[in-house]
Length: 350
Image (tube, rainbow, N blue to C red; front, side, top):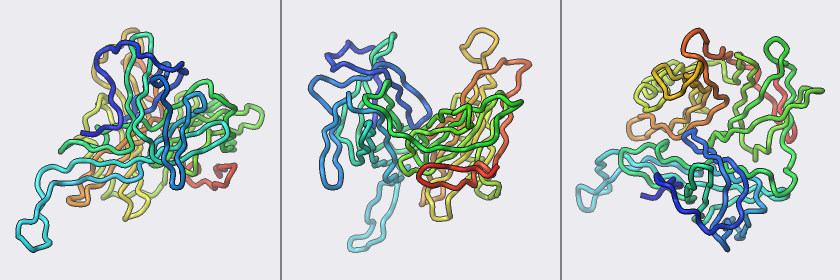
């Protein structure tokens, strides 16, 4: 099986790597990996564009993002009758994903297909190996979510001054006047982008969205406003509810807050979910119950309309006490959904 990344289960000996840089890797299944990121000596990222090939050294990179270019659920098939075009399918479908990679430096935005690259992520506990591919193929019965990949690799500090992102003007100051945090999730990869707030103007600047549309959410204290369409689709909601009940996840509390599909022809279905852990955890102290406000992306199997989990992204995370503390209040905001977008500004009509 080809996989876009592989993390060793056992500690690896420290490789003879080029000097690394502190960074964070976001994965499509919602997980994160933090540490010093490096390459093996005398290697670089090789990106194949439409008309040229770029060789990019690690010290030039500020961020790497990967986006699904094509995703399929494929079944084994055969021609039951010689000379006939009718196919006979068998077995569970297996996922295939092709990825496009974007590399951001301080001055350039490069897009293409990445040649297989090995990264090392060193933390105080151990060193982990992460392998990047341009194509994944899973096993029969495996979901796209299980075939996870790094959606974003951010290096700190950037080698050069970052390109200015997009400004979002939001007059809402937050619960009881306290400053609000802004988070965005890109479509379809669900890369999390954190907005930097200007306290004087109440503007937020997002990192470059690279042309991708985004979901937006604001958090202040225990109140979160999430941009989502007010219209509902009962049939689609029922379909996602059934799929959500079958999904395997650490969070046993799953409040489905909204479902969105671009149009009837779109293969991607998004679900806004407030996740919580109601069972026991290994955490100690007063706060032991994690929660997340997430978007899960589903893929529809064209053969039988079955939904398969393809990826996840988190707006916000937190931990509450097992008794006496409530989950955040999530308010669905049509204003944060119906936004006008240009090259410099998203302007919610709140």
